[in-house]
Image (cartoon, rainbow, N blue to C red; front, top):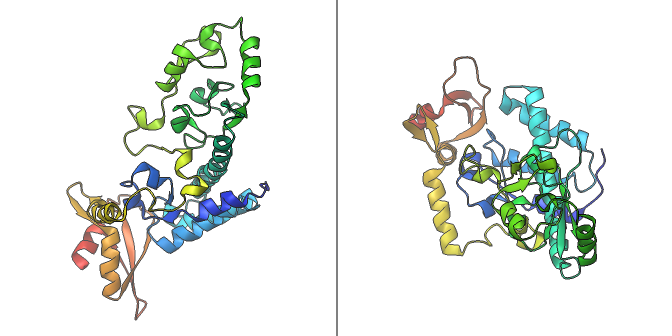
Length: 324
């Protein structure tokens, strides 16, 4: 599949900062939106290569070709499992590619909201659309409503939905068409039904009750590290990583990340992999890739490469802590 060229979307992806996954989970949501990480991949140069491959998609690249290249690079970090690596590559393309397109659309829609003051949620309409997304299909809300800060697609992993701008005249026409439809099922959400949507409740068609459309972060089973993004936070005019925090606060964040970027070993022993990499480098060693897991293995193993002799040794996180 060849994707239509979108230079701004490509630039937005390339502007994301590559971040070690141990550090990424401790970042504030708005900074996460401007960052790029991949589970188990700790080398920044590898993360940057993966990010730049994804940026080729909105620049006009071929989806299948880029997915294959991503999978080939990710596979060693996933035990050589090509199927799993391909699924991960697909997810990365959908998440970062669609986010970039969406941020561009969002910027345009916010710039024209005086003439197009409403937004309509649209699914792709196939059998793979999740219930909580299908129930939103065709719903129309004010463009500046808080609902869109948590539900502007892609608002969950794998989301393929889009949003279209609607004029006042178009919205009035939809209201006339729905005048005989039960109020809870009308497409233009107003009053109680708009408030319900903000709280994560939207009525299904044919009187089949309500669907839970709360964003992942608000669902009980998800937790604080659930998928979360706000289209305004990665829009082109907000592509500077430090824009959200003054210099002093940003420096404090870096110090906190040094404390929190920890990999837990045997529940009560821990080692800061990112900090260990710096110490290893000073001692003449390079922290290599995380090795595939073997049956019965209890901790991630890492390659350590001697920069002079090229010798490679393998150690767990706990062993690295002793080593450094």
